[in-house]
Image (cartoon, rainbow, N blue to C red; front, side, top):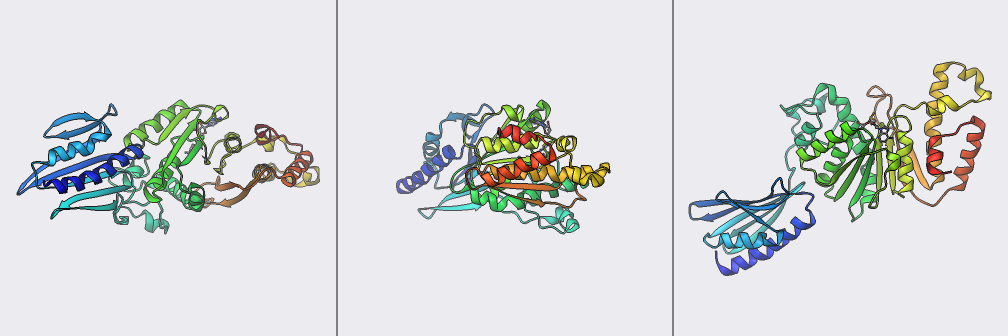
Length: 387
Ligand SMILES: C[S@@+](CC[C@H](N)C(=O)[O-])C[C@H]1O[C@@H](n2cnc3c(N)ncnc32)[C@H](O)[C@@H]1O
């Protein structure tokens, strides 16, 4: 390769070295092809299972550091006329090639695949244009068990697929609002097998093209081990899984968003309290079953209505979410609540979205105190918030 072409290529390879360092959590590999008349020689730079950076050519593997990538490629290009280099990270690729004495560069989308509804008729069946699409997110959908190995969405997982996809759709504007230019740090409380975090990770990194980190907490060791395995299989390195009671968690970095999907009973309150405690910009939860307020409240004025158990339970559901919202408002959050999917998919279909807007709000707090006295209740969220 001519010296001046080598110099130009070296400059671009230095940019690739910086990307390997800055995007270490997302780096996949660099594949290289060297060309000479009708000869092609392949080489690759990748991370092995010991987390070492490897340069491999002609079956010879060499451990290198990331400052040596450019050097190795240039050294090996000397006896060839041209080369092409493909840098791959999650969500984007960079293609570099030499042609007629020049170096050309093209950035491409890694998921630039047509939405392949033909793979699966789920799109037509639910009449929904999915955000996490079959054809684009197949590795993810297979790993989390929504898609089978033949590339079809499993019938028994369509509800889960809908739930997750609706969740992403509803928080999309919020993600754009809070992620700004920085990394977005997300805490998933009562994560279970972390489906929601895996899907959000895919969406934020590979669709919104933003950096993100996840901490997923659950009290059950089994689901944490299962989540770790899935992250390993997907090569998602920007996730940490912690087996712990939410109440005991202390973050070592800023938390921007707290999420929780179907955290049972007061796990939802713990997630909300964690969001307030860590001064999260936003908290998004889909509550699950809860019995606390049902077992506490009384309302003599409505005694003729709530003497029917089923009505008392329904009223308790409404009061539980209403009081949670009031408490978040009193901590300075702007809160909305919607039915985010059909109650036929799951009756636990309310999504509460809270965005930090101000300091404490005395008016909401006073309203909460009035309600607490009238209903004779002592909700966990107030205790967890120390108010
Ligand atoms: C219904 S599952 C939901 C899991 C997951 N978010 C999902 O939607 O698939 C509820 C999870 O809450 C976890 N959990 C309950 N109390 C908890 C606590 N105090 N701290 C951490 N996790 C808790 C359980 O172990 C369980 O995995």
